[in-house]
Amino acid sequence: MKHIIPDPLRVVGVSLIALSFAVTVAVAQKTDNPALAPAPVTSPAEKAAIESFENHVKDYVKLRNKVRETAPKLSKDATPEQIHAYRTTLEESLRNARKGARRGDLFKPDITSFIRRTLKNEFQGRDRKEIRDIAFETELKGVVLRVNYPYADSAEQSEMPATLLAKLPQLPKEVRYRFVGSNLILVDRESNVILDFMPDALP
Amino acid sequence: MRRFVNAKILLVAFIVAGFSISAPAQKINGNSGARSSAPSSPVKLTLPLKDGSLRFAVIGDTGTGSSQQHALGSMMAKYRAVFPFEFVLMMGDNMYGGEKPKDFEKKFAGPYRQLLADKVKFYASLGNHDQALQVNYEHFNMNGKDYYRFKKGDVAFYALNSNYMDKKQVEWLESELAKDTSEWKVCFFHHPPYSSAKKHGSDSQLREVVEPIFLKHGVDVVLTGHDHVYERIKPQKGIYYFVSGAGGKLRTGDIKDSSPLTAKSFDGDMHFMLFEVTGDEMHFQAISRTGQTIDSGVITRRKKS
Ligand SMILES: [Fe+2]
Image (tube, rainbow over all chains, first blue to last red):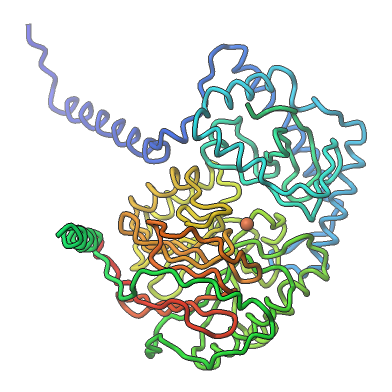
């Protein structure tokens, strides 16, 4: 028996199919480069580890944004003196507010295993060599790898390629990843305070 | 015969790309002219200086505060007297080795004092030596953002942060370019997707991500730094790439000999670039610290569908 769909419904149906296709295309436009696909999450435990990490980072951002209120306001056309005053106040206040911070507060064992596995599996051969070259050619003079210490102003900051950042758990704009040799660190973007680090992240 | 076939292939490639350029391919050998006492050449403009054209300069890897950076800044001011450019694009590494208030003076405001006094605007991008808060600096016009777009005449400019190309930035770039109907689209950022320098060379991780976006959305010209040399890359899939990373640092002899990428290169002294856009033509001139023209030419805009 042949199903006959009344015309108005057929139109709606076709429109919905077209719409869903359009949405798929629109989404695909943003993510169609396979190099930017997120790393595969292989188990519920990994999914939970990522969520937990992202929540801990969000908690940090809440704290830093509260602390930031004590720093002088910074305009988008500030003088060097205003930038310096903002930066040093933010750094001091953040360090005071996180006096008890320790390595592993954010990079807990479950998320570090996920990151290590991701970097090992997703970057092989020439890609792996290039990422290692980028990390190891960075000049680190003055950098003290210690939680709650500022990353040295005078030191270079390793490039973080898009292909790599796409695979790591996503961060809010206030926090950034960076390499110090084979260590992966988390820094506060504006104050450059080291929030946490995981040793031997690079395979 | 083989040479003829190669020339024919090149010609076809140019036609397919829809670009034409009037400058020959070659490497200018280093002349170790980086001493601040090197004599200056007289100002010699190769640009058309047409009424109503858009004029700007390009510098990269500047922030050392050295006497050579000052000399280059003075040479830019000298050229501006005959070629009044409106603004300067900065390719990143705007300040090396620290950013206390005195560093902003020593490594930026001092060397470009004349240009700043003449109300020339600077638009910066960030390099691997730059701190995040440069985005708030009054003279860098970044409006608190490490990636941003602005438009001048028929040209849209996209400053990117190639040191931290996260997904948010890639998506922003893609969506901004997709709706951009400007005649010309120019992207500028620190790390070069193509470079023949020995120290860093082509950043293929970056290229893998940005090149498909540039191609899809009709980017015409890409300006970069990081390698402390000058290089004009042969058009890659129709896009013109420049490396201009010797505005304050120089790596003499760093360009690989006979690189298939090079249209023209120079690693004998520091340099800056001048651009003039008039209709479908973008003229460029690269000038050394001593005022010598090291490259010049014109890019004709390809037709966009
Ligand atoms: Fe650099």
